[in-house]
Image (cartoon, rainbow, N blue to C red):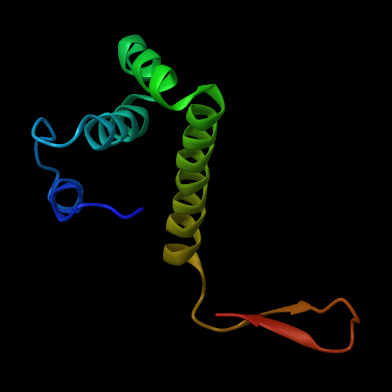
Length: 100
């Protein structure tokens, strides 16, 4: 199952999602609300839960959280890492791995 071009464009350009299919619209709204406010409207939560199931909504929420976590780490370290390699020992402690 893929995404329709209309849904991709709505996300890419932060457009109104009112014209999307109900699943597309509600998923985009869920993600936007969670990222902007760390909350989701109860009615939206309940509608997705009814259509997709509790486990699906939990997994969607966890996936969004993982992306937030990775984005935060990347944002901090990408801007503050020195331009010289940082060497970390490998598991065998014989070779070093370089970060950067």
